[in-house]
Length: 75
Image (cartoon, rainbow, N blue to C red; front, side, top):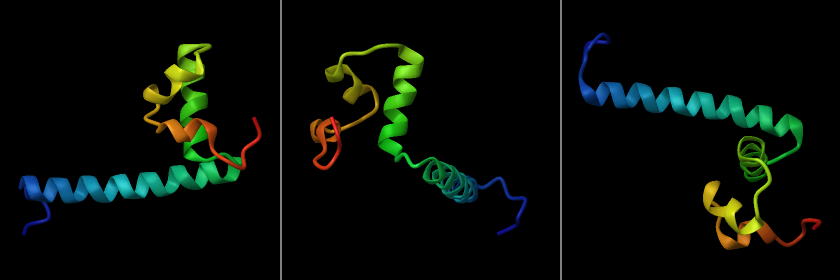
């Protein structure tokens, strides 16, 4: 396959590789802050939407019901 091919399969492969590289970079940055991706999604929703009731945060950030009340976390 030519590197400059416009083949859709090639495009998906390049896009997937770029996504994995970006995710690796972004998760490393989150790790430095000490928060996980769930906490980041919650904080981002609150920043952009303002104060929200707990029961509306989960669906906005794609959490399961257990995600908002995980054991071992301070309330």
